[in-house]
Length: 126
Length: 241
Image 1 (cartoon, rainbow over the protein chains, first blue to last red):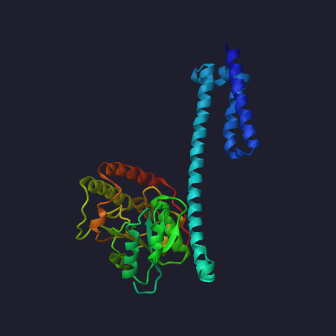
Image 2 (cartoon, rainbow over the protein chains, first blue to last red):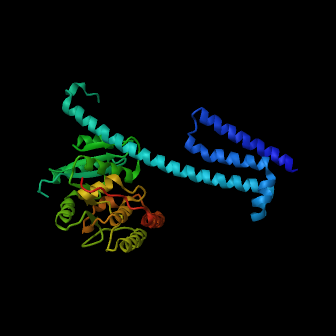
Image 3 (cartoon, each protein chain N blue to C red):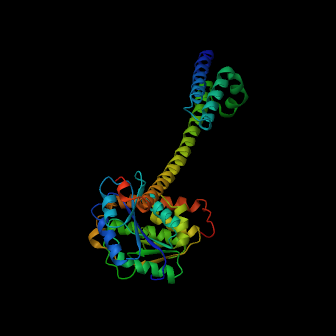
C-alpha cells in the first residue's frame, strides 16, 4: 500500500518540478515566483523517496499523522504560502500599475502642453 | 488669497459630463487667478472634452483608478508644477467654489496644513438620511479619538492643502476610502488639519453614491481601514520641496 502512494506522490512531485523548470526555461515564470513551487515539489519528492524518515523521525511523532495525510497537510501549507505570496505580488503590481498610470497621465499632459506651445497649430493632430 | 501664491483646484471626475463643465465655469468665474485641473478618471463619456472646452487643464488617466488614485495624480501635478495650495473639489458640483477662499484663509492664517470643509459645523442646512448621519457620526467619533482633535465631517472631499500636505499626498495617498484615511495619515505625519464650516449645494448632495443600507456597510469598512491604518508604517517625509 505504502509503495503505491510513494509512486503516485513521487510522480506528482516530478511533474510539478519538471513543469516549474519548463516554465522558467521558457521565460514564462520568473525565478523569484518559482522558489516556493520548487520547494513544494522537492519536499513532496523527498516524502516519496524516504517516507520512513518523515514518518518516524518527526512528523508522525509530533502530529500523529499518517503518510498520505502528512503529505497532503504539508502540500496544503505550501499552497497557502504560495497563495499569500501571490497576494503580496498582486498588491505590489497593482501599486506599480497605479504609479505608472499616474506618471503616464502627467507625461501626456506635459507633452500636450509643450506641443501647444512650441509647434504650429496645424501640425498638432487632434 | 491675493498673496500671489499659485493655487490649483483639483477636480476628480468620472463620467461627470453633466456637471463638470459647470464646476469648471464656476471656479473660473469666482476665482479667475486660480488654475483648474480636471483629473479625468478614465471616463467613457465627454467629461474630458467638456472640461477642456471650459478652459480647465485636463489630465486623462489611461483607465479608472478610483477617487484615491485620481486625487493623488492631481496632487502629483500640483507638486511638480510648484503650486503652493491645492484645493480638491468634487466634480459633481456639490461643493460651492465661493467657499474656497474660506479654506485658503485657514491655511494662511490658521496655521493648518490642510483645511477641511465641514457640512456639520456652523449653520449647516445639509440634509442626509438617518443612516448616513449615524454612519458619519460614528466615523467622526472614531477619527476624533485617533487624531486627538474634534472632527465633524470625516467624509468631506472639500479640502485645501498647503505645500507640505501636497508633498505628502503626492507621495502617499490612501486609495480605498481616501477622505477619512487621509486624516489618519495627516495625523501620523504630524500635519495640522482644521475644519471650516461650508455650505453644500443641496440640489446635488442627494445623489450620493452611498445609499441607505450601504452606508452601514461603508462605515464598517472605513472603520476597519482606519484601524489598519493606525498600524501602518509612517511614510518618510522629505524635508523641503
